[in-house]
Amino acid sequence: MSFSSYSLGVNKFVGFKNYLYLSSEPIFHQVLLNTLYLVCVAVLIELVLGFIVALLLNRPFRGKALVFWFILLPMIVAPVVVGLAFRVLYDPTLGLINYILGLIGIAGPEWLTTASFAMPSIILIDVWQWTPFMVLLLMAGLQYIPKSIIEAAQVDGASKLGVFRYITLPQMKNIIVVAVIFRAMDCFNNTFAPIFMTTRGGPGRATEILPIYAYRVGFVFTKFGRAAAISLMLFFIILLFVTGVRRVSREQLLRV
Amino acid sequence: MKTHNNQHIVLRRLGFVLLLVFLCLIAFFPILWIFSTALKPPSAVMCSPPKLLFSPTLDNFRAVLAKPGVEMMFFNSSIVALLASLIVLMLSFPAAYSLARFRMKRKDDLAFMILSLKMFPPVAVVIPFYIMYNKIGLYDSQLGLILLYVAVNIPLAVWLLIGFLKGLPVALEESALVDGANTLQVLIRIVLPLSATGIAAVGILTFIMCWNEFFFALVLTGRNARMLPVFLYTFMTFREIQWGPLMALGTLMTLPVVFFSVFFRKYLIQGITLGALKE
Image (tube, rainbow over the protein chains, first blue to last red):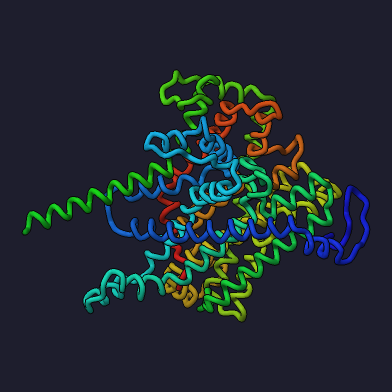
């Protein structure tokens, strides 16, 4: 379909025309950069934050199950509802976030309506909702590091940082790769709902990412062929990303 | 010296607890806000400064429940999410087992092939499916959505279950095999009961994903198979957004899953954390 000019029942083969069009379309370039910006920053923050929280929770204390349950809650709420809720919370005059910032003397920015703050606001929503996913997977990984290795290292006088750098991190490599792959795929594809419910890609095109762009081209302007080309580009980017991560980690994830 | 040390420990404890409370608050605050907005009268929803004290009302919930077809949408969402997660479990459990236990060539590639189901952007998938479903009569049907949700949710289920199964001891299965059981018997009689927590956890996650899914439901359903997340749209018109009913519906959508997760908390946490995705 991406090789045709498919629009409302009229189907004509046009070869690579859709792709050629995209390669010279500045909007496409900007949307592509937006997408990469969103995914890279969001997933990186989620990984670091998730790792810190997982390490924090990885010790025995009373009420651990309850704390864990609280922290997992954001994952449970529908992304659509989350998007809508944050839209009100972010509101510059009526929203709670700027109100709280105002109480401690900070004049909050216009979160979703200024170009420079819109994408970070979206990233913040994503981080709030999906860091729990990272915590979940990383917690799982941490529990599988044999205690004996860590104890042995401590007996040999390794510092906390040393244990983390030379034992925890290498042992966690696999699970980090898996978590990053899953989160990135989701971030590429499914940030649609929160953006659709908050900024719809705006202001201007500040938060327009590939799925939103493809949706607009396909369902609003009914250029289905071109929309298919855009979404296939997205697929190849994801494929490239996943194989890239796989190469870099050079790990057989399922080795027997 | 000793008291100084004790003080130090107490301070660190306190810091730890405060940090945890802070984390929980951040995680819970927007959800609490959704619930509270659902209980607010229209005058208290949008006002500055935000009202923390208000006389709660159930009007918003009444407004939602008075809409025609709500029950049907709750039914649609439940049945689709439930059936899809059951099918996902039935398909991904054997797949995960074989990937976790059997020796085969290019196993990693196979696992990544399964993963590629999730790499396809929904926007790319949805147009061909829209056209195809219209031709074969699956447009606006529960079955159509179920099929898509199954395909989309299998990768995470398989990968989580592989991790879980790898964490189980092999010895039991081996002794059963020595005693003359075949693979299927081992799978059903031994592995299945042992993996109950893992299966429950993955089942819940899949259910949540289907229950909350928006995009496919938006494009591929019309009047008959309307799902809850799309129903939200009813309260967003060009002229105004009715925040109260919107958040009431959000609450109604979230509460069942929250209760669910309270009940199955132990499974959710144990099931996933036992299943560490590593050797």
